Image 1 (cartoon, rainbow, N blue to C red):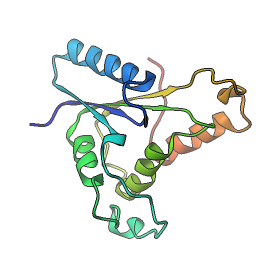
Image 2: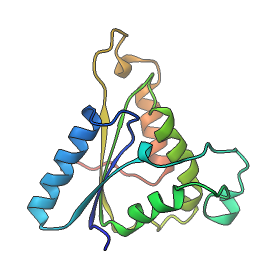
Image 3: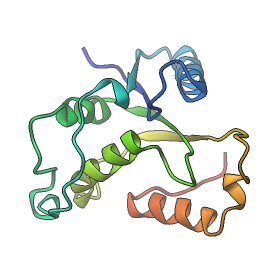
Length: 157
């Protein structure tokens, strides 16, 4: 049976800050709503890199097979509430999360595919001895552009 709430972590490191925060938010939502929840780590699945073939734009799904992308997507499609988190590495998600984002792109040719779902996007960044990721040139523009490309709309409250 699929869970009504999906906590999806895009961190390559198990048990890290991203996993902890996604789990806590997911569990809090589950407690408040009384719904079942499922925690999924993208890095726990075999996921090939995007080939840049653009076949996804006509197929409405990724053309690459032979890995676990369809399983991850089934969790996403089955959930009614999404809690998606990723660490920030050099003003971007880590490679495994970027692979997931790139490979899931084809499904979004159907702009209704996530209709009716509620979502929280969590971005985790800590001090790592480098200049702040938030202050990097284009950081706000990049996050905004990526969100809009996938149909996300920001709303207060």
